[in-house]
Length: 64
Image (cartoon, rainbow, N blue to C red; front, side, top):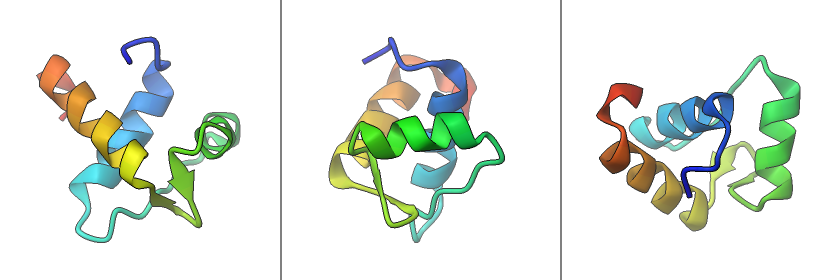
């Protein structure tokens, strides 16, 4: 879980904090690897992506 690179952690956490769970990032490589990991689908977090983002926030509150 915590092996997620920091850039990807930030992308997940920002999306999880949005009511629509939409994902945006200027870092195309980080974003594409989230799609490949099935954490993002159609520009929004999947349930697995949202769960991971919540666990990341619980483990490291500084990501807020």
